[in-house]
Each structure stands twice: as structure tokens, then as C-alpha cells.
Length: 203
Image (tube, rainbow, N blue to C red; front, side, top):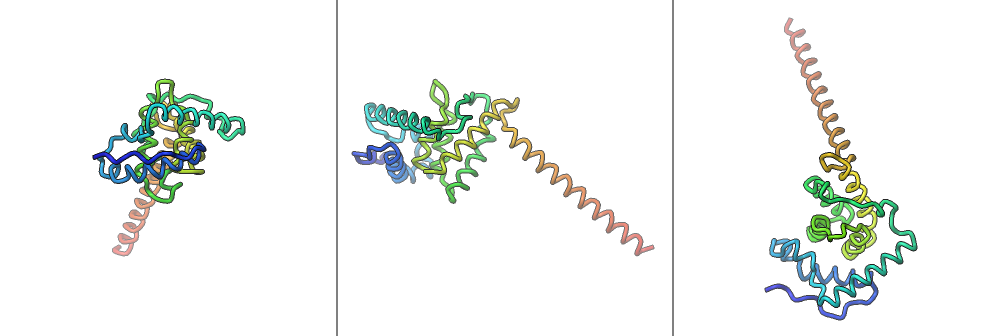
């Protein structure tokens, strides 16, 4: 059977509510998510109660976003739109997993899947990085802001690429290949030197 929804009432302040839901959802879905028993689509719902409660949650989030906008707490590039159909998520997923792990200090597949679901199944009006940051704050707290800022930068770059890959990723791959080529040349040169020394010794 599916785990029961977290008990009500939840905290009224938006930030407290996000943290409360995050803790409750972790307890409810942790085992299922790690065993593959809950789909990403189902997890995206996270049992937020009745439709009325969902509307209240959305309204509270919108109010919080407007407040944060007035305080200038969102980066400027959040105003730019991203077309997720132009982004290669196969390339982004490893970075998302690695970056979330670095920021949290431990692996958390629930947070990774939660983030991936938001990206792969955006609403009809398009993905909003501000809502994504608010949603991830329940899991990542203050680290959600730098993560979403970096993520949005990569998404903006990826949609401009013919292959849907961020420019930084391409440059990193080029640098990696260059280092491997230089190492191979160094090894080859060392082998030639040793061969020359052996031939000189034998002569």
C-alpha cells in the first residue's frame, strides 16, 4: 500500500511549509523512491492534499516569489526563458546529480529525481526557475539558490547549442581530451627515449 500523506495541519509560513513537506515526503517516499516503487511523475505530486490545498500552496509560493523579487533575491538571468526541447537532459543529468551531491555533502536520489521531474515535465506555460528554486528550498535550503542559478545558466547555454549541450561542458570535454592527448604524447616520448637508451647500451 502507498504510504499515508503527512498529517495536517502544516506550518503556515511558506518557507516553514516547504521544509515541513520536505521532511514528511522524505519519510513517506524515501524507501519507495530508492527501490523504484514510485514513479517520477507520482513523486512530482508529493501528496499535497486536496485541490484546494494545492491552490493555497501555489498562491503562497507566488506571494513568496513576489516578495523575493522586490528584495532582488533572484539573479537577472532568471528573467530569460528556456526551451527544454532544445536541451540534452542526458548530458545535464550527471551534472545535476554531481552538483546536488557536492552541495548537500551526500547523495540524495530523491532530490535529484524531484529536480529532474520539474525539468523534464515543465508546465504548459514553461519552466520557471523561481518556482524551481522555491520548491528545491524545502530540500536544499540555502543551497537551492546557487544550484538553481548555476543550473539556469547551463540551460540557457544548452538551448543555444546545436547539440543541446552547455558551452562550459563542451570546453571541459575539449580540455579533458587535450590533457589525455598530451599525456599520450608524453608517454610515447618516454618510450622512444628508453628505446634509444637501450639501443645505445646494446651498441
